Length: 297
Image 1: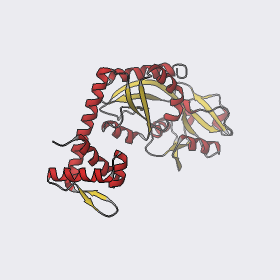
Image 2: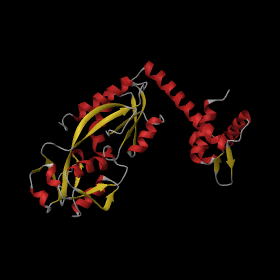
Image 3: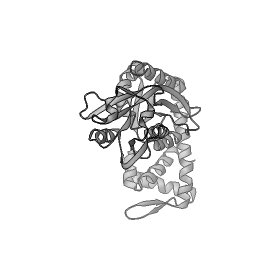
């Protein structure tokens, strides 16, 4: 009978492409790991890896069986998590994925309350772009995601946390910065700076801007909101910024809110269908909603 541990070794070698680094990741010696891989190959009657001096590569058979092995490992993890949930659904590890345009602005508002209301949950936080997080959720590497909802997202359960307004960020001497409030129509004919591809906020901002008759300034695409903020402050152009990302007293920069209809994004928590720890998910959602109620109306 093939052991779960042998499949974990197989997965580690495939990830690291090196027996030594895989052994370190599995907290065993390299001879132990190498020996178990050889025993697995003998048991299967197949070569799983091509062994070269500086790297290790999967054989075609190894590629095929790696996918099956990872399915087994995910099932084993789900089995263990289900058992934990049955004994105490509000304890154990919870791996939370967040997008870069949410994590640094939301986490300071919610982590203290989460720690108080769910003291037996160990929160592990992972920041990445949407596509990567969605894949990791599907693979079982993450338990829940907190991100901006897109209508293209399929096959997940969604819990709305709050609606976050988008505000105009402009240089202080820009004509639009002289108004106390704006409508989306005021963006007609304007050139707008954006984030690079892969960020939900880029797609959401461009949808609003294009509908208002604005155009994307393609001379520069920022990798982060902070870079985008600095480019606006330097006078390069205007952009839309989530309300939670506003900082007081920024030199050279002015924020202006929009009148209705207000551009906004829906920040939500999503989870795989039939996830085993739904009581924990509901508790997390309740805590975040409570934490954010003073900030987002």
